[in-house]
Length: 250
Length: 330
Ligand SMILES: [Fe+2]
Ligand SMILES: [Fe+2]
Image (cartoon, rainbow over all chains, first blue to last red):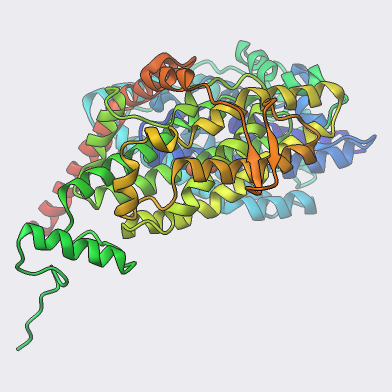
């Protein structure tokens, strides 16, 4: 087994899984039915992507591992998702700002992965890119709508962007497994993605009449399994049933 | 020169009494009423009440199942549950649209729900306390809904009937999905089987109550039948549901919690025990275990969403103005 490839696959899978899990919390509680449905769609897309990636990771892990054993029986330190994906939803502005910052990154990441040297990742990326492009479009449109909407929405989304900014640095700092995968042309060069991301984010924030925060101090750790306080609760809830009845099939 | 009377093609220049007779004849001929057709005021009101209640039920009905999305025990089940709850939101949308064809605004209907003036199906005032409830709801609650909705596919109001055709297809899928959850549990570990039995025990009677009061105590039914909004009585639908569901419970190896349940050879259907109508009326009145919580959740979502809806409207207005200004400049 190529440990770096496994870790990198899990990085991609866990980002999608935790985002999907978080977004699912909105289902039934959206500001209007149409947006409730839209957000659930995005959650379903992420979960679908995470399943394909977890199945691939499970194949690499072997020993009877499955998508479910990886989702439900790994401990917090084994999850490699970015911290921004595990942050709570708070309000609509915070959720959409979180997604906008991540989706823009994810779009450029998957654009590269469509030509990844790993065939399975390449195939998954080609399948997922349409969804991911739509997510980036959807969240950017909401940033603009809120930024250029009312005074209240402007303030809320500006605050959200400001608060979330320190979780964006981690996107562009590769861990050792990602680095190895970059060398093997499986993964993009994350430092290089930053430029594309900066440009797109600046452009959207400008149209939205929002202020782009200063660079500042950045949080990190997710890629290496060091998480925020929120992660434990996500896993406690998500993993509760399979862990309570470890021999059960559902 | 063409002369058209498209607006009131079938009912032109008649007095109210004549109109009502023509309306009834038209219904008796198994024709569908369309939004622009003349209809008695009471027919319109009955439909608005029924369709909006139905829409509210779809939307409030999302909550007890959404409660388990974060805890679904496998990724396959999580995705399926999420998609199911999303379908229910879609049903809410179709039905609000059908109600709007009767000349009422969705926002007015939603306000009535949130103020507690409008009703929704009482079944959603029961709690979902175990994963097996996701199975039992799909199997029994969607199952009971289907019995009612298959009949409504032939209801006399066109837009309602057409919405029901779309909805019924998805509901059958939900029911199969629910039954499949029950099947996995019933064939699983002893604890899982117990979970399934417990869910059946809790959902069986409330599901039977979904068909409403017995025929002798159902005051609006006769008129609804005459207008062909309803085509079967509450008791008929309930009996059909029981006859279909009992063998399914047997196949699961679970016990229906009714000691009076017995096959009646003569009527070729099951006899069943007395429904606790006191509980039913109490839950309708607001005393169910989750009435307050469900409504509070809807109110919270609506209020927390107010600034989002305002922002979207404000932005749309700005965009429209920018477009108009640009057009003028050009
Ligand atoms: Fe439904
Ligand atoms: Fe359903």
